[in-house]
Image 1 (cartoon, helix red, strand yellow):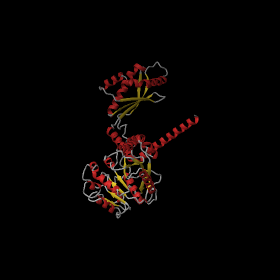
Image 2 (cartoon, rainbow, N blue to C red):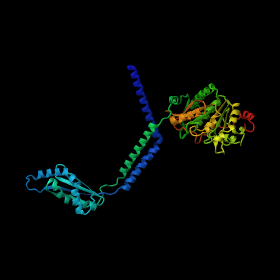
Image 3 (cartoon, rainbow, N blue to C red):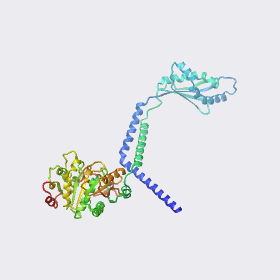
Image 4 (cartoon, rainbow, N blue to C red):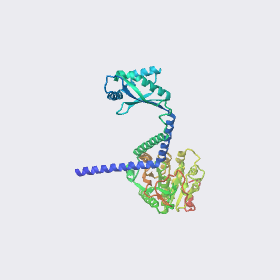
Length: 495
């Protein structure tokens, strides 16, 4: 029993340690990702607080006087002791007398006003020297009130501490300079500190609330699906690589090996489940579905399989840019009847690989365009020619276009970028595909971070991976035409 308890305690400690490490990593990434927001918050708060303090700053003038207490009653033999005792007693009672209605009435009556500024007094320790200060925005008024209090105080204090006489030692006169100077540097520093604290709170809230997929175990726990591959994040020094290709990597830094391993697992799943048309999608934009589609198609074709890659994302066509070909004359043009299937199929620099770009739809309702009969006929005709058909679709968590394409697909491949989309969005995407009765082969984790930084040329690992909502590097030439004759022989005017 003790061993079991120790084991359970050790497991809990390890879990807590892992959770803390995840939190710290979230904080680190949050700072790296939102550091510009942090700088902006610090600057805005610094300038804002300094400007506010300057706008609301009002000069305050302090009039002060120092005085001693002298004995009035001659019956006391030791005037010195009596004076010190009286001063100590005044130190205790002076604030109360200053706030008393009796003194206020006496002073306001003398000055003919109903308003009195702030009044305070201090006693020099071990002496009978008192210092009284009056602070006001009007220097002359501050001094006038100071003199009035000194004149009226003895008569009021006599009822509390007995007869005394205040002897003036030092008088500041009417103050000529404000006692509260405006401190721009201090106000700006306080504002910068407030901005930094706000940024820290923001990062902590984001870190505690961030629930994303970090590894293969997270995928299995969240979706109960196999992870078919892990593609590293790629970057060239000086610029991010939006759509890395295995044909450009040349196997130097592991990207090609990762893609080929993904292709091996995906091909095995498709073979075991007898699937031929696979839909590649993601939960949100930015997860790299186009990178997975393009590289899966390339590696399948390199193995000798006849592959057709179709870009079904009209909202953000990316396949054409990945291969450096024109987007005109693609799937949308075929579905709207402007070109034939032969004219829509384009060749790439990869043997056995053909593509149909998205094209430019003239019809605004792309859902109705994809739900028509012609896309079904296109896929049916392609089944007789190609070994694999890969459909690059929009994120199924945002657009319903994927649901229409799902009608003609055999299975789906869900792309999950590491530590990117919320787990709830990924789970919704998987449920969405399941509701469409489309089997999910598995997931591919993309943008996996590595400790290796970017290299001088080729690929390196590190953050900087993009989705495809941007520009790709151009690829190769498009001179191969080995499959166009097969396509045209089975398709006349349209299909």
